[in-house]
Length: 573
Image (cartoon, rainbow, N blue to C red; front, side, top):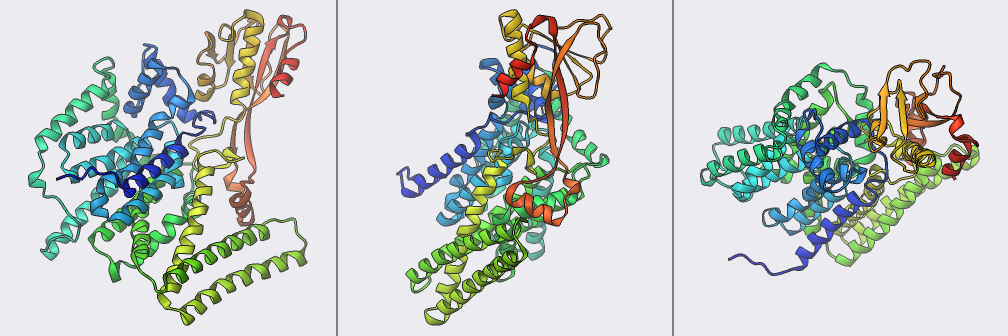
């Protein structure tokens, strides 16, 4: 009989799910869409408006987001809503496996999935990566639980998500093949809790649900038949990346892994190292999954930092199992371990404050040496404190207190890293997870165009804007509601549009007089120029040299007696 009684464990899962929703939804539409995000959002907007649509390979995102735009309004928040919701669902999946995972391990892995920086960043970007990751994992969970209908629906959504599915599917399939071969080699049952028999799974039912969801969702109930063709194109699109060089260096991928993912990296590697001593087939499966996913990220020519999502999911599973084992241990005396964990946490915070201070190049040499001494002394105090507790009370209390304290301070660091990865820090343009340059003055450009339009037409969307020689999906998204916006490569000398947007270095050369104001269209960090000391400045303060692309917004001077300058100053204020 199923037990539907509400428990404290259920309440904790609900709290973690609310936390996952909060870190993904708060300020979701605050930052402007990048060119890559805007390209997908514009396809969805074309579908919502009944225009000719080029679905591309991410047809599932285009169809579903287009439906949101049709029912509500085209905003950056709605453009990113589906990835945010799927990312939150991913953090809720351990609830369905709580009996198999165990109480502590299930809660720990749910918390890790809720606040992991890579997962948070992917959930707040308008693309299909998080839809692919959550759908694939949902398929695995429902397959495990023998939920045929939900398994079919989840698999259909995964295949509709596009090229982002394939690296995760390949890594997961590779780990599964290893599991099968291990079973054949050892001729014994796998050491996995509650592994279901495939003979009891109604594959015909699952395939029927898969086909129905794939066709109906991919075509938006036959309104947009081209959506299914876009889904079929996902595999060729992924394979095409093997012949296309990426601007993302391997160094940047490793820096993202080391600086954002300390929680999964430290305890995940710890879990890998402990497999020979206390691991089982579940640990080995997660290890192989993580290593295969990392290998694909490293060798894939068209890699991006955000591809580390596929590495972090199994790595966080390993980390959660390590922490759960330590939480399940009963050190004696218990309160000694608790007090030691609190002391270790506070001392590690002090260590980090000293690390930040020594990386700040504003101190004199003598003061810098003093701070190095403080740093070394704090580390020595931690070691001495753990040794004294182990000698005076018990080694188990010393080990548990140290591990709990280390986990607590790393979790605090992860919360901070997730906040920055979400683009909520003071320098969102300097985050490694961005899939394109940051549109710094996007809101100011849109507001200025709207104010100018309202000034001479009476409505903010009735103005005439000509974009000359600027190819930017982000700019097209900004002007999506302007009725007379057009993008051209050249203008005749007698043309006199009310507003013109040009690259900063381009002269107009038109007969009419124009007044212009420059704006930053795109900002991107000059990662290749960073040396090791400068990387420390980025880690601590997100300080980095920015490369900028500027445009000029020109307004015909005879329309505004005071010119555009006064209006721009007002907007900037």
